[in-house]
Image (cartoon, rainbow, N blue to C red; front, side, top):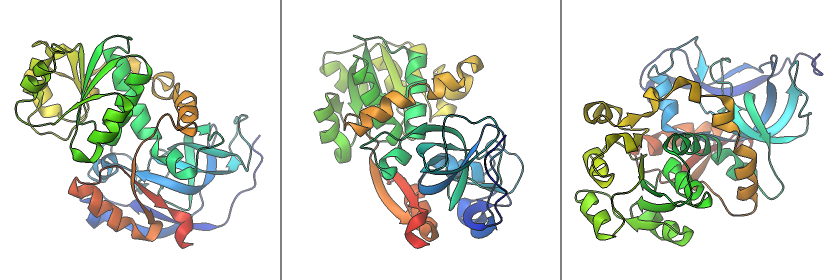
Length: 326
C-alpha cells in the first residue's frame, strides 16, 4: 500500500507534444502533479540536470507516448512513495533519474516521478547531486565494458565533457593510469587529479606515442564527433576492439570500433548502470569526485540553458533549479 493521497495540485513542466527541434517543440506549461506508481517515488525537484540526450529525445530518440518531458538527472526531497517502495519516506533527500519514459513529464519540472533514486549523503548539496547521475552512469558503464583493471592504461578522449571528466576520476580511483585529451578549460584540473593530459586534434596518436605510453590498453571516446577515431585506433595499437565510443557512432561502424548501442544488451542491467552510485556519491560528499557544473538557471530560463548546450560550449553540467522562480 502507498502512504499518500492523490495530489490535486498543478505544476510547471518543460515538455514536448510532438517531435522536432527542441527550441520549436519544447514548452513551459502547467500540468497535473503526477502520481508515483508501483516502485516509484515523487519528489519536489531542487535541481535537474540537462544533457544533449534531452535534445535527442525531442528529435525522436526512443520515441514513445507523448507528451514527454526532459531532464533525466534529478535531486530533490521525497514527497510521496508508490506501492512497494520501502527504502525512503517523505522528507528524504535523494538523487537519481526521472521516469522520463513512463510519465508525461520528467525532471525539468517543479515535481518529478523517479524510477531510480539514492540517498544524498551528508556533505553533498542538491546541485552537485543532480550533476552526477547521467555522467556517472554513462562513464562507469562504458569503462566496465572496457575493463576496469588496475594497472592498465586508459585513454579518455574528450575528458573535458561531463562523461569524460567522470571517467577519468573513476579510472584513477580504480587504479588505472589515465591519459586524457582536453582543452584549456579542464587541462589543469585533470592534471591535478593525476591524469596525463594532452591536447585533442590532429596528430593525437603521435603525441601519445611521445609520452612513451603507447599502445594504450583501452580507449574511451566521449568527445563530439571530430574525426578522431582513426587516431584513437592507432593509439590502441591498431586494434579497434580496444576502443569504445559513446558519441561517434557513424565512424565507429566504418572502422570496426565498439559503440554504446552494439554492446551486449545483457550488460544494461540496473546493477551495471546504478550499483556504484552510493560509493561515488559518498566520494563526492568527501570532495573526492565531482562532475563540473557550468551554469544554473531558474526553470523559466530553460531556453538559455538549451542555447548554451546546443552551442557545444557548455563546458560542464547545466542545471535547472525550479525553486528559484516559484
